[in-house]
Image 1 (cartoon, each protein chain N blue to C red):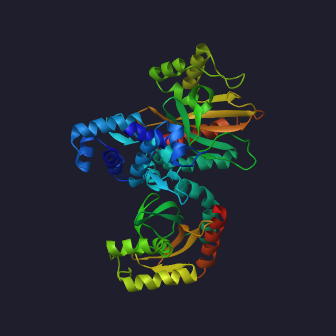
Image 2 (cartoon, rainbow over the protein chains, first blue to last red):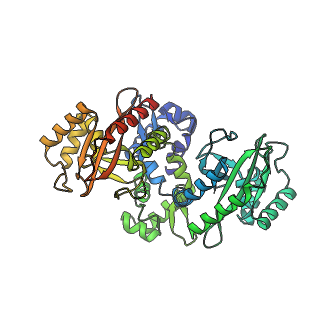
Length: 238
Length: 238
């Protein structure tokens, strides 16, 4: 029952913010009467709202509950001043990233007009092995997580994507040793990303911060400001 | 089943972001084995996450789903530049407010350091009849909503709170006629709020924007900037 309700909620996306019961039935594979019943119950609980045209959208109450997630909204509150400082210092794309399952998820992104275009938006997802922020989370995520990522396969996005276990392990070692990573065109042609980890008081990784610039840029001057911001957020979490 | 799952999710709040299964059992009145089973299922769906100490918190996945709510995150995206302009122009507390059931809910608040202190935070709630933003939503919310608000009773918060049907109806008429409202100490002693409506293309009210200042301030110079911002967001939604 709960699983089917979440199949309905999980059908919504940035590209599909409103759906009719027929759309939901098609996407979930659930029969229309089941969808009908679940939509009414989800709406009773504020998780869905019915628009004027009869279609459904995610409800404001679910947004309100979601805003209580310490790893998302809570982290963002702590990180925001440091992200803004980093943004002011670089005028590039600055991103705050956490892990959700086997993916990395943007919690916040500050982008300058005129900065290199980055695919995705807050709430978007990135592969752990092919993004700078994801690699940082993976480097500090433990052996079990690494095993799951390897088992899922290292999909290639560009000629520079890390697709072998050997190269992945040596990159993760390097991140742990140096405290940051530079990825040139691992996920998208034309962009270069640098990332550094944010830690909790207990020493576990909480998030990563990345700065995305044009692939032709020299990342060296970005790194001290990035690392200072990541340390600032870590201190803020402690 | 779904209702019980939402009783668990609804137990979390700004003041209680993490709870053990015993806390949840106490707050929901559900037996511990039921709470245990529901927590596992909610965690399987990413709605809850288990912290290192075994307590539960709202999960990042629920934040991600909630960010799809058009009336919250979607509206905020459109409104943000106008709210920032209004904030720059006034350097006071600027708030974006929508209705959720019989209450008004902050979607965003920009506050200057040194501006008058306002109770609450993004995700906080206000009574419709006793807040400037709530009164604006009520003025354009239809007769059914007004009937429900009257039936629920007009609670008094200060000597200036509107507590009679007659005064409420004449205030709502005035909002519809003038396009804004000034509330001096309706909800809190020491603060004055002005609010104006944001409309959808179809003409229904989508939100309200309010500016909160010290009760001793002259609100007159705020009103043109407030109304321009509200019109700007309405245009952005169309």
